[in-house]
Image (cartoon, rainbow, N blue to C red; front, side, top):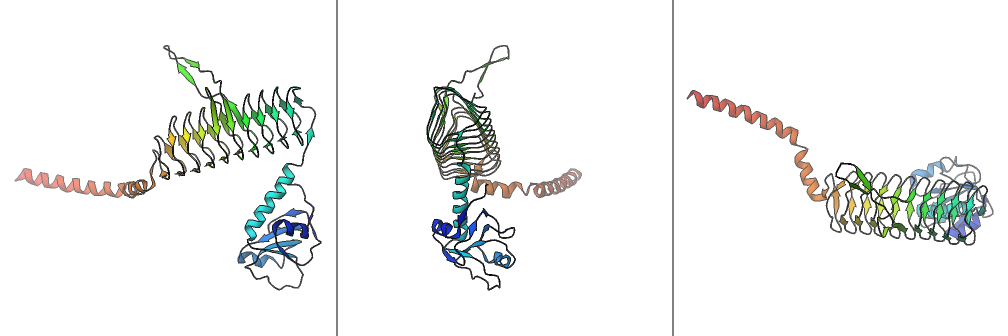
Length: 353
């Protein structure tokens, strides 16, 4: 992140804090209290970090009002707030927003078709290509080496990092972030087997719709629909290295961790959480508010408000009950062998009688 240039007084007004010390000091960077330098703003939200204050070189420190500031010889500048950790996160977010949206203009070499329309504060990085009939709203930033296909629309305040591909007819909402290497609108994995065992490609003629406030991680791929649309609804957060198949729909505010794969035509509900490496087969209907443990394999419909584990995935309670049994299988096997030996001895004795 680039250096910032705000006074302690300005920062205090942003976060509604009370200043102890010099309000005229200017801050250049945000840093941890352990590694701070002159010009830095740091945060202390728990008692265990108070020990760093005497040796800290931070120009100012955000500190939780519940903590007692230690008495030291060197005068420090503090900003006292109700919740130091939350405040620091909000401040980090604001400065990051300033940094990432600071660029504007069209760099060369790059190409933007004459039929494409873009609004104020547009940025297009070098070696990027924007095809015909695109509609780009205010304050959109497209970083270098990106490709935007025909008839793509992009909402305001959306950030597209380097090396992103957005294929024809995709619709991207406002306040979205798409990280490097992501591909939006690639062909779905659709093939029909011929009588001789070879495969015929099924044309994919739909598109992808990404609604507002969506984050898409690096190298994540979202396939376009065979017909109609693959839909990522508002507030969805996708980690890196995720595969979203054709005609999938993901409900509002669902979060999916890295290396998960969602097969075609599956419908995922709202406010769900996926751990890493979850696999979902196609044509399923998954409910709202579901929690999927890492590496779960989803092979059937899931009702709302469930928590599932394992592969094939089971309800959390059933999984724990089953696990309590199968973790004892080695011990059970030993006992069975002992019983078998005893039975064999009894059988031999009975034969003698």
